[in-house]
Length: 287
Image (tube, rainbow, N blue to C red):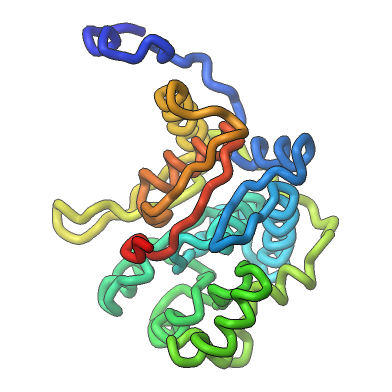
């Protein structure tokens, strides 16, 4: 493959990367967890989450979803900013054979209702400040299970204690769950080390539904496959190779993981290159 544009590629970037590996990001994560278990996969507010922990917790979440009756092809909405929970949940959804639906936490009630109506998730993983919004829409939606998580769960111990004492209640992060709803940490503890069978996922299987920008009216759900992640990540890995070293350099991510460039491109780039992904939940907080 070549064209007039390839003459403008950096010298290190080939005209094509074909053939692409017949793998998924779950395969890549499992290889990393086996070969470099202590290598940080995620950096968050001073905490480092190693690849082995991300792999283990995503397996536990997959087992939890299976226990809740989630089956391959079901959609699971992720109403989360850039936090470790989003990636734990997303890889768990994939291991369960389900489809992740990352949604913008800043949606208005009308926008959130429209997104849920069009994607029909059977479960929602939500950060605590958005729990009430999900519950207000649940009765008229396809949602059977609501799973809540707090921003503080992956903070370093001292930061977490300070957050609990000073900010949690005042900032609307402290909630009480309705009967039948679940805490994410409790599900992970219950299903830690589970031997439940993991679903086989293929590169051509649907992995994600991401919302378009709405330039033709309301946002549309766009389906991406597991292969799309590997293609996009491989291309970005090659394109950024002159300025980035595999396994060494950190990639900072202030772009939201509920948008395609961060979710499909940068996330895959980081995992394929073994680069720790530093998550920024609030890109307006420049300091």
